[in-house]
Every structure is written in structure tokens, then in C-alpha cells.
Image 1 (cartoon, rainbow, N blue to C red):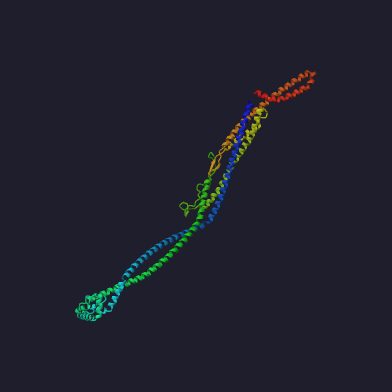
Image 2: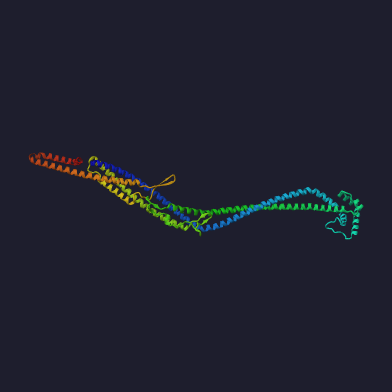
Length: 531
């Protein structure tokens, strides 16, 4: 029965050890996964810290230049918008001048058309006026002497009515006597004035009409000539307006060029300022990333083992520059970071990496030691299981007890370590990247099961092997005693048969050797029979 039980325990021990070796290999793989990505993360973090320190140095060196550049840029921007407004006003004035010039051309063309339409009448009127002009002394003399028709620039010749009447008659008769004048004037007015003057020299209303016609004609001629002079002046004004518009076009073109040059300079200045602002933004993003990624480290059960970066910095810490109102300082839409605070953050980030590295080693090294103990235990367990199995089958004395005992001691010791370290209460998980996403998984459950199973099976195997070993020793002792008793009895019979003793000595010695050979075999058989 014990041999059967030993056989079963041996098989179970071998299987448990194989399971344990598999778990150890998987556990070491998990540890290497953690070790690899923690080293990569450490290298990335250290590189990021070094880059951030370089960025802080550059920002510190260029801060004054940036602030001066902002002042210059804002002044240039103000000047640019002023120039843009002035250019817009210039365009407005240009369009107004252009419209005014168009209106001037319209009025000029209308005036010119009107003058052109009256040129013939002007020439005819001028000819008539020229004709009348040589006879006007007669007519004006008559008209000046008349109470009813007088020129606004003339005064009555005398206060004595009789004298005036005499003068009037004399002038009228004098004109009537000039046949050429009468004929010319009659032709102009369309009636014979000679008969009127001779028959009634005191009726001189016709002369007043002629005077009015003369001066009206002069006024009309003057109006035409004034219009012509205005047209000539308008031509000059239009030419000046054309020149002014052309000059304005050149000024506007220069303004456009200056504005474009100013815009280019502003764009260049904006690009230079943006370099500093991008550096501020990148530094802020890096600081935020450090704060996010360097979170506190807790075990699977929630026990904190490494404080987070934010905790190391304190509750009142801020990476931002604050104004007098407690708001984040902003320049051109860029939030300013406090470079001194960023340097402090990087110092604490390095401290965090040191704490995390120490804690990582503190977790992984015991795990490696535990898995090594389990692996060694499994090797001894396999040896003990195989020896025990052979012993159970062939009845050999050696049943793998010592190897099983070593396996049990190592397995129990590994579990004791597991009890003190929390078995699977680990802080660091394995990491796999799936479709660009990092996925984390706690490990150790498989190794925990293997440790417990191996310890239980190894202890049971050791107990069974020990019992079988003791039983085998006891049976061997009993068989040896029986063999000795048989040898003593044979020796006594041989002494009794002294005559035949010498002859049978050789036979007895051969039988004694055969009996000793059988003792060892019978010992195991006896143990089996007893069971």
C-alpha cells in the first residue's frame, strides 16, 4: 500500500514541479518585461529632464530679449494699424477726389457743350455789338438826356428841363441827319428809326431800347467769355486734379508697399517671438506630463509605496507665473511658466525617479529570489519524484526522500517569503502595447498557485517517502535476524554430525552465501507482505 501511495505522490510531485518550473519561467519573463520598460521609462524621463533643463536655460537667457521684442512688436503693430487706417483714409480721399474729378469733367463737358452751342450766337452778337459800338455815342447821348431811359452808371445831364429837352432834340436831329448810322441801326433793330427821330425828336424810347439791347448784348458776350475763361480754368483744374490723382496713386502705392513691408517685418517679429512662446508652451506641456506620469505608486491592495511628484512638490506648488490678481500671466495669448518653479519640479522629478528605482528593485529582486528558490525546489522535486517512482516500482531502498525533503524545505521557505512580502501584492505590472495603447496587467497569480501546490505536494511526498523508508529498514532488519537464526541452527547440526562436517563445510559455506544474497531481496518482499 505504501509503495502505491509513494508512486502516486511521486507522480504528483513531478507534475507539481513541472508546473512550478513553467510558472517560474513565466514569472521571470514578467520580471524582465517590467525591468525592460522601467529602464526605458527611466531613460526617457532622464532625457526629458535634460531637455527641459536645456529649455529652461534658453528661456532664461532670452526672456529679456523676448519682453523687449514684445514691446517693439506691439509698437510696430500699433504703427501698422495706424498706417493701415491712414491708407484706408487715403483711398477714401482718393476715391472722393476721383469722383470730384469725374463730376468736374461732367460739368466741364456740359459747360463746353453749352458754349459750343452758343458760339455762333456769340459771334453774331459780337458782330452786332461791334456795329452798334460805333454809333453808341449818339444813342447814349440821346438816352442820357431822356428822363425815362438812363444807364445805371450815368446821371441826368442837367437839372434844367428846358436845357435837357433842347439837348435831347439836338442829339436826336443830329443822329437823324447821319444817314449811315440810321441805316445801320435800323438794320440792327429791324425798323426805320430815321423817320421816328425826324417826326418826333422828343420820343426817344427807341434809343433806350437800343441801349438796353446793347448792354444786354455786352452782358451776354461777357457771360460767354466768362464761361470760356471758366472752361479754360476748369481745364487747368482738371489737369491739376489728374496730376493730384496720379500723385495720390503713387502715394497710395508707396503706402501699400510700406504697409506690406511693415506686415513682413511684423510677421518676422511674430515668428521670432513665437519661438520663445512655443518654448514656453512646450515646457509647460512637459511639466504637466511629468506631473501626470509621475503619479504615486501603490500596490495591488492600494498600499502607497512611492509618493507622487505632486505630493513631493507640495499643495501650494504651481508652475505658472501669477500676476497681482493671482491669475496666470499671459503675453500674446501665451501663458508664462515660472522657470524657477520648473527647475524645482525637475529636481523633484529626479528624486521621484530615484525613489521609484529603489522601490522597483526592492520588489523585483525578492521576486527573482523567490522564483529561483522555487526553480531549485522543482529540480530537487523532479529528482526525488523520479527516484521515488522507480523505488515504488522496483522496490529499491532509495525512494527520493532526501531530494523531496530539500524540495519541501525550499517550497515552504518560498511561501514564508511570500507571506512576508504579500505574495502577489505587487506594485509594478507587466506592460504590453496593443495598437499603440499601453495595457498594464498584474502578475504573480500563477506563481502563487505553483508555490502553494508545490509546497503541499512536496511535504506530502516527504512524509510518505519517510514512512516508506522506515518500513523498508524495519523489514530488512527482520529478514537479517531470521537469516542469522537459520545459520546458527545449521552450524549446530553440522557440529553434531562431526564426521560429516568436513565434507559438508563447503556446502554450508555455499548455502550461507546464498542465504545472505536472499536476505536483501526478502527484506523488501517482507515489507510488502507486512503491508
